[in-house]
Amino acid sequence: MPGLDKDDNYWMRRALTLAERAASQDEVPVGAVVVRDGKEIGTGFNSPISGCDPTAHAEICALRDAAARVGNYRLTGATLYVTLEPCTMCVGAIVHSRISRVVYGACEPKSGAVESTRRTLDEPHLNWQVEAVGGILQEDCGRVLSEFFSRRRAEIRQRRQQGSGKE
Image: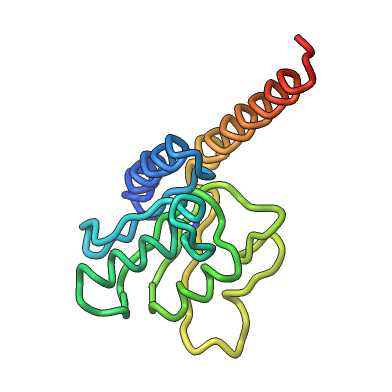
């Protein structure tokens, strides 16, 4: 696969552990890790509900953490690993942060802005080019999301049944 790095699976597994952390807090399970020179410099997981912040996507949280740790919002030479294809907002933050490479697991058919709904990183007017690689541990990343939403739907059904007196 073009653009595949020998450490991609390792770092995506790290992002998956962060996705599980989001799920444990009833957030949509997406996790992200920023890596530069083989070292983790930032982490994040979805937290818009708990943080009352619509921008608290895993990618944004990881970029904020990395920028704070290195003392610069420009993260040139870094790779962002994220378990789900980034949305338009996150792609914008990725470009502004000067991330060199984004690696994601599962595609997001409703709002993925790297390849699923649009190819935002390919826009010719962008002043920064980001390499994108998708499908790393895609089945594992997709499974975490599927299991989360299956549980959530089951909980909703159970609450509805309890509320209506049905068993």
